[in-house]
Length: 465
Ligand code: SAH
Ligand code: SF4
Ligand code: F3S
Image (tube, rainbow, N blue to C red; front, side, top):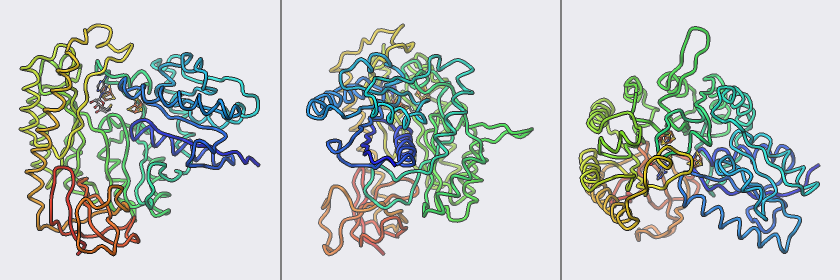
């Protein structure tokens, strides 16, 4: 019996966090125990992200801490897994602190790699050599199912009761947006069999899960052919919402190019499918969209959102934008601002363009927007987004909304509510609005109705009804 302890930390997106919980489950099956403290662990795993330079810098600085820790605990094993492991391979292995390097396609091998490293303290690396080769799709389909088959370990992020879970619907990406590293580190698009997804959803519901979020880099590209039938995201949403015990189903992230409107119809028709679309536009300028290889025009994107709002009642729309893409002029930037004002997002993430080695934009286009201009554009968009959300959220005042309660709020006393006997809880509506209210902790993981008494740009406040 293994009595070693592991500590795992995620630095990336939802997909990265899902990988962390599955790797944790695989390690637990091998007898490893989980600890919340790196200083108590026999092995520390860091699951990494390459999407922007900043994400990689955070990992490198964390590795600096671990190198320090290893001075006092030379037996400690450090494993770097995930996207950055795939991108940097040997370079990471050469780092003084690192014993094991494993890419996103090799995660099922992590328990064995860790076991071996604990035994002999030799350096080991497993990453896919030709991740974009057609043969890699087959390998990825094969091996990744082994990882996805593990029972989900509890959400490593959250200290609240688990009532919501992520399920991978597809891996990889074939879009090759010119700025993006994901296709190079996650490999080609591979959709999972609907049956595997439905079975997993059924098991999770048996464990008390009520909300399921289907994950994919371009989830609306989900396609799985079995015999003479091809299943799409719309089919998958229907099948998941047909499961007894599932209350809410979500899906992220949608790509605006080739967004099949049957998805909108399913959202409108099936009450369990949440009226929430995360559908990044990235830019409002056609010139920039073309240089990004996004495959749509700004006007087409806006039409799609109009159609979505007309089809799905109370739809909330969220997005991502990149500022300072190579060659972005003031006029381009203004087009982005105009798009944001036109679409009126619930919320948006804004990123400063960060050149990623090996991508088309990095090889062919000069990173010519000065850092201070990127910073100013970033701040401006955040201001506009927040102003819109603040105005639009006022419409919720006095309304009663159903929320899935996540647990105690991490930032207590955002508002001084009267009922101080109960802690401040945080919940989310089906359209992903965050609601803060006072209530008993026993509500965590349950649904509750909250009457909204105060609103802000990012949060609604209210009272239990
Ligand atoms: N697959 C998703 C998101 C992938 S990465 C999609 O296509 O929408 C998440 C976000 O990071 C992207 O939407 C984009 O806004 C941002 N991003 C990706 N590469 C970036 C880069 N090189 N610099 C800055 N932001 C980037
Ligand atoms: Fe990256 Fe574009 Fe794929 Fe999203 S769709 S992961 S931005 S290449
Ligand atoms: Fe996610 Fe970052 Fe990889 S965004 S897919 S962890 S590069």
